[in-house]
Each structure stands twice: as C-alpha cells, then as structure tokens.
Image (cartoon, rainbow, N blue to C red; front, top):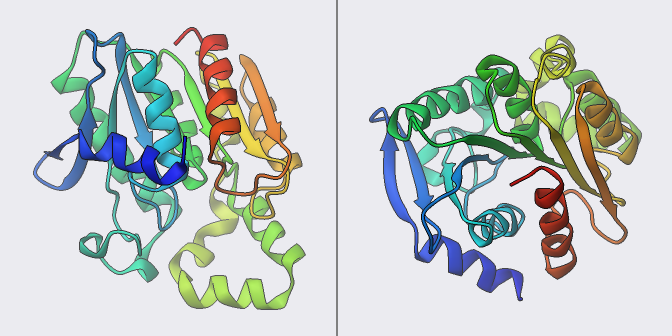
Length: 248
C-alpha cells in the first residue's frame, strides 16, 4: 500500500478529540470491538498523519486495537502546537503523560499499549515505568538518551550540531541530563523495537541499546534501506510480526 494512502486512510476515518481541554488527539476505532487501546506518540516535528506514524496506526487497527495519537506541543508539522524551537525532551514526555492519564480515564477497562517514534520512544520508556500495567511497548527508531542523540549529531559533523543548537536550543541545553534507560529497566511488560538499518539520528547500536535496557525485550527488527522514519509495505509486514510477538 502506498504510504500516502496509509496516512489518508487512518486519519480520514478518525475522530478529533481533546485530552483535558489541552492536547488535540486523533482517535480511531477498529472495525471490531477493540482489543485494547494504544497510545501512539510522535517525535520531534511529528504528527499523527505522517507516514511513519500512519503505518504503526494501521498495523494496530488491523489487529483490532483502538489508536489514540496526540498532537503534542512544539511541532513544525502542527502549526497550532506552539513554537518548534521551544521543544524539550522533558516537555514532550510530560505532555504525553497527561494524554496517557486522559486515555486511561476514558477507557479504564481496556488494556493499554504504548507506542512511540523517535522522541516518542523516549517518552514511552518513561511512561511504561510510570504506568506499571501496560500491555506492551512498541518503539520505532527510539531515542534512548540525550547524550546518545547528541553523539549521533556529532558523528554527522559540525553543521548537524549547529542546526540542533539553532533549531531547538532548549532541547540541546537539557540533553546531557535526559536518559530513559533507568525507566526502561523498570518496565514490566514486553518490548518490541523496529528501526531502519540506515538511520543516522538513532544509529542501529542505539536502537539495540534501547531494546537491551528493558528486561523483557521480545522483538527487535532492523530493515535495510530504511532510515529514521520507517514506512512502506516492508515496515507494515515487520510491524505485523512484531505485534504478534507482543501478543497484540
């Protein structure tokens, strides 16, 4: 299936809600009674309709899960979300936690899974430790820590570091202090990770470190030819296998 049509399919049939009168949420139910709810967290400059998020949403919907995808603050892709230069790792995590609380209150009986891309993976590592009762975690191209994210930029060269400092100065200032590894060590549910083998923002070794930080890693997959935003039919097929491994 074409990635553009993937995006249109899931967002066009979704409802738009608001979590606690603050964060907009895109929500879609499957064609059957939902098996559970997945909270799907985008990364820096992300949005629910982007192809790397849409392919995850479609995979969950196909397996009978309700998808809740917030439009988190400070994303270039979401003009109403506030200035992109104000983004921080901690701020994204806190906003995602608020939506998680809203989601649990709205569907209290449904099993809750957490999925996230890039900085969304960083966020769900923390949320998985906080909630303690998640069905599973699924992370795509996940950021483990600020120091690792900075090291990847350094490896790209001085222009990449300069761009980071110019575009997200608050995020750059907090990087050394942010680390999801201690939280992931407390995650009590199964974890799956998918990533692109050619990712320069979250290199393969960093995605593997994220996977190894959790005690119950049960699926790790890296796709050749994919980079930081995996999408397309091969990714959809890998997601189906990953979700089966996670019991979704």
